[in-house]
Image 1: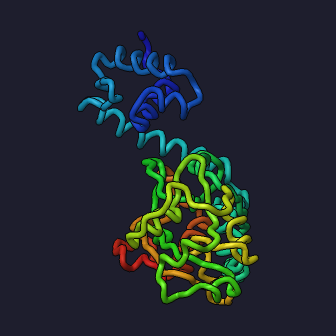
Image 2: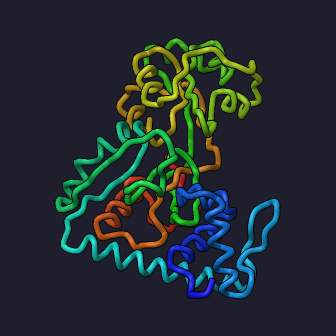
Image 3: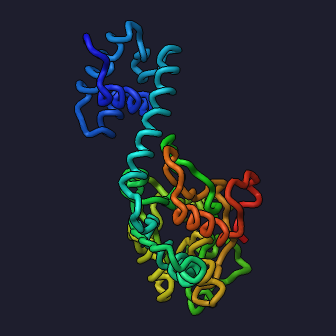
Length: 309
């Protein structure tokens, strides 16, 4: 390569560094792996030194590469920020929040009037999804995914701790012998959430938490839509494992009743935003409001303070 590497080649190199492999970088960029390899080789040839050490485990930046990647990343972030600000100058752009269908239905929707009352000038757009595949890749400003996500391109704070509690409609709950303990639920109709890609906390793990062995496959109705699981529970068709932040209001108003002890998994649901750009005022207001609604402040580092009661 005789001339200075183009911005395109340099961007490919930064994405490769972020992704940890040429294959992952190619997938993110929507190009072939040979194109990534060619771009990296061209930049290394122009520099006269290696940017990456390669191995069967992936790639790792060299000491020379670390400095280059750090400076390129900072420069591209500033460039992208300037372009984004110029594109949206003078526009009133809605703030987009991406959440699961069940969170939107049972947690967010009842609270939206309060948000609009407090922030009448903010246009809010809520998109629902029951997959985390688009997190950080669609046009949302904020995401509350289905579980933890490790992505260096995203800033993360805990939205709420993951706590599950068995719930049922009051009529069904009244037939369960509470004195028998968690084992009493084995004979009840259980509702199961199935996930195709990422296993979620299930009844087998809940029983195991109390030292109760179960059959490899428990009987009961299954669905990959948590909203349908809750609807079935509300209709008295079975017992569901309820994520506390979603079913809490239903427990308070008596639509559902707790039929067993809660379990805290030690995990949490994050609230995410892009790390490479500051939140616009409207998105920042929504971010703060979401955390305040769960009774915590952004940046809290005490896990105990993040538990929902």
